[in-house]
Length: 439
Image (cartoon, rainbow, N blue to C red; front, side, top):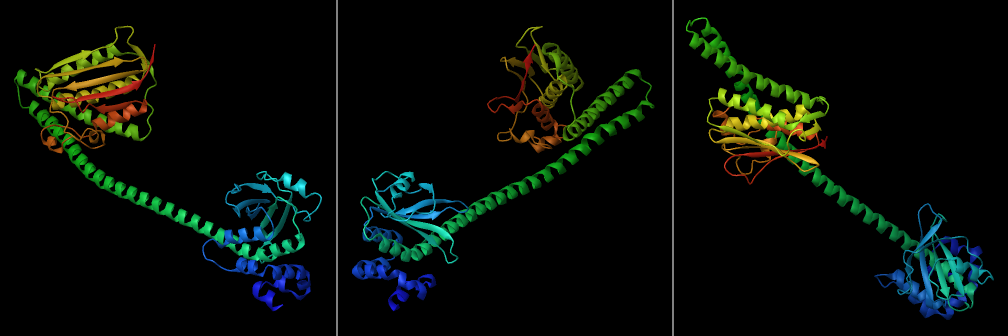
């Protein structure tokens, strides 16, 4: 009794009513005492595999398998084998209650297990149960030959089962720990990404706040300046009698009314885009006629701006009537006008040219000028709301910094794209592409 109490301090084994059942295994242990001591001794790293090797030798088995039960399933996974060359890791099979060892049905049961065919003619197996008497795994020994003294060897496996139960639990805890560590690592990465995103959003928020401040300042200037001119020259009309001077005053008032109207149009467009305004549906559109109309308006605008020496050129990829496409005239017109407004504003001499090319799927429009150009590194920023390429230009030119942002919003509605040609020298060059269905 003292020997078994010392080696196997488990109530279900030490129970006085059950000790008599282990007489045979006691004799077996006494005959193999050296091997049993080695089996029970602790050698540190990987005791589990070493014990499986010793058990396989003591039970005359070719291989001893340690199987772990999959949670909430009637399946077992081989997690360790005494023979490392036995490729049984991660193989699983449905476990039914073991037939009595040595039964005539043993061979049939072996053949039903999806394990490598090693020519086993016999096997022994015992369940591994925890302290709540719940099966958590099993020990399975396969033999090439008939197993002698099978009852004693089976009982030995029963006596060793609690050790492997503890090791199976340790394996589960290690797996849980590894999963927790991976989860923690993932959460830390997510937190780091979120922190970086928050930092970027904070910087963008500060930048947008500054840009909005600049925008409001510009907007105030853009509205008050033409309004003051309109009101001032309207008052002067009552004081002059010369018809030529009256005509000059009326021209100045008209020009400033158009400037004010453009500012208001931009603000309305922003409101439309932010409120998911539905633009006019696509319809047949003749590109050449549209561009001719826009060209006339641009020439008239340059004359009003006293920039009569700037020439305007157009280029068409198709001849009428083959220039008819299916798209939104409103969006195309507004986008070209926004780009031409900038070209007129920032060009003092030379020419402004615009047109389109066609590649059977898309139409690509362009607007080029010989103005001051775009400062290097600002090619993407100029499409942001409330932004201009160089804020110092505000003092020299008019503008609220929303024209290109509005143009980009227009093109995004057509699933197209707009960009600035960074390789263009001697001015600025813009492109935008829209998908079309040619009629």
